Length: 617
Ligand code: M6R
Image 1 (cartoon, helix red, strand yellow):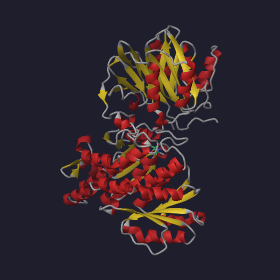
Image 2 (cartoon, protein in one colour):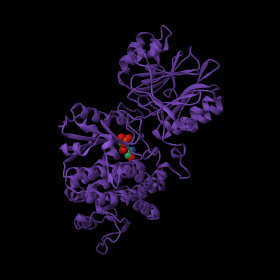
Image 3 (tube, helix red, strand yellow):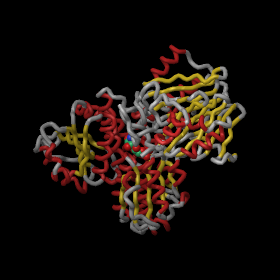
Image 4 (cartoon, helix red, strand yellow):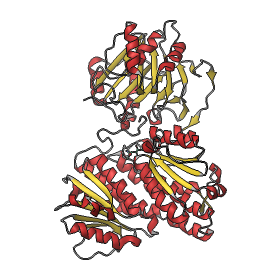
């Protein structure tokens, strides 16, 4: 299997220096980063002044077995890696760490000019063992290590690299010391009590310390038993601020749930309420603190929402809500399109970028483009220390806590909750609704945690629907308006974790072609919560029913259908305005996807071919 440049990639990096058993710390950290997706793993540890490397294709279980068989490296300083193959198949030799004797590295990202560098290094006499782009970095570091000055070697090397990288580096001549550098791929430094960590994400060291420092692009870290030092690309020492993670260890664990995804689905009432509490003051949403004032909202002539995947689907809900309530045109753009389409966007526009990870390469590029055109930019981001959170003019940090499962659930719900509040404030700022209505809408939204809880209480019904889907080959989701936005998200969720082919259609669009795919017993899950279009949606249900479809209706409690239209129904028990019902409804759709995945024997937390966030194009 060959993975090409441009595939999803999100390897995991860990590194440690301290007094604990380094192999254990590295393996533990790698386990916490498993959610990122990987196909091989490895560690390198200083053992009596020598670097001992153990690596293998396969999951961490294979690593644990290999360590038990070959002997665990004994030491206090080292680096580790989970690899998501891009250049070269998953194999022992392609696994990280890579070494050429004097320099050992782990790498997350893609070196775009690796072929040219490889040619250059081959001419200089270097030989390559693997097919990876990463090994080139190890050799280039060695090439620039002529003066045996690690910092200089790193500075010279990063100047030559095109693409994205986070690197953990060991120099054989400097035992008990770890170097790191990054550009475009995340790397966090954990600051403990006389011990230090590097990791692609905080959960990898959360058990040891909550204190962390963000390594920024083009910054170099050196950590050893004496402490940590940071340098810029010219070798000048820089000062960095220590921050404290708000997450605790429990939040980053399964806490008795069989999967992170189920745990995260169940966290939704709490995190949605937290989001509302964070953004609502005296019964109304207020965004002045982040700079999103009524004056600014009044001056906005168009809104763009730029995002990918599930975050983009949250944007589609926002589009319906903002246009309906505030009467401002909203365009939702897939970030990978937006960045290259030469969008007509300027200073009177508000560009909202939505991202759980805050590291998604296309979304980040969309943000940079919008900024360069003078647009006002607002990020809605779950990971506080992320690049997007730091680059946007204004930022709402959603308080969902760590989302570990690859399939996004609670992050979507908090994004939607925040976007509703923006829609309400927008409408108020523009004089379309008065304060009474602003308060009423906000109070209505405060009902959503309870409505989500009602869905969770009835999860058996979602499980039953899942049991009806477990063996199907294809299915459709249809809906209108907000229900169409939900259908898109439900279809993505189901595809991601069940591998069942599904499509989402605006209910009225099916008859313009796709209806030809409907035949006996093809399930059509109809999201039908919006009363203003309900008669139309029912007509669309009947059209497909007449062609043999099996109709599963997701509707509000009390909705009436003509006899025989619906084969199965799931009622959403929510005492709130229709436009806000997507919050409890999405929970039911997430549960259906989750249970279908489990019934099909798939691990919903780690679906094939997917990574938690996508830091390359
Ligand atoms: O971290 P982001 O929210 O920017 O990620 C965007 C998408 O990659 C992400 O939502 C993806 O679609 C999820 N796997 C969906 O469950």
